[in-house]
Figure 1 (cartoon, helix red, strand yellow):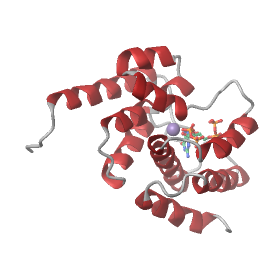
Figure 2 (tube, rainbow, N blue to C red):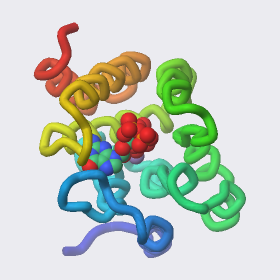
Figure 3 (spheres, protein in one colour):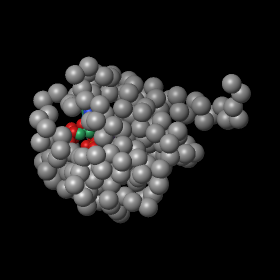
Figure 4 (cartoon, rainbow, N blue to C red):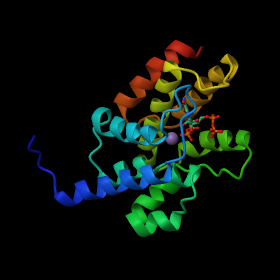
Length: 183
Ligand SMILES: Nc1nc2c(ncn2[C@@H]2O[C@H](COP(=O)(O)OP(=O)(O)O)[C@@H](OP(=O)(O)OP(=O)(O)O)[C@H]2O)c(=O)[nH]1
Ligand SMILES: [Mn+2]
């Protein structure tokens, strides 16, 4: 297939995918099949290109890298040195502070969502859409139905603060919330 794409864009994206694959190499998803974690970040990036029609390379880079600092030994300095200040800033915007208690982290996601940049909002929407589709497919190991339900309801609260960003993603998210949430 002939595509009109500068060679440097391809190299940049492959560098991100390789960086994420190396960093997440010991991490697995919580599904019973223990899917490689990197499938998630590649899937989030694909939602952005295929469904949200995002063409901003830095947004796709940040989507691929979005869980490296939160979930691995990667530092923001490393992201900035490898991928530049804009990508690093975006990754910062979508990174939870894992030193905080979980309830506080969840509360801060709702509180910070509306004040995020439009690019960070896109990544947050795609991340939630991927995780909610995954949750509809199969429950993570050890999650009781109540915990699954709490995730749907909390995700809806976050998404409510991200609205007006991308209609296609928001419509897809709303279809899921219609199936699982009361409001
Ligand atoms: N649905 C689903 N989620 C899984 C699976 N494996 C890992 N996860 C991750 O689990 C996180 C949600 O689980 P929680 O218990 O609420 O959060 P925690 O892992 O941060 O403590 C998500 O992290 P996150 O990317 O930081 O997103 P979010 O917490 O901001 O939504 C999601 O990516 C899986 O098999 N299914
Ligand atoms: Mn994620």
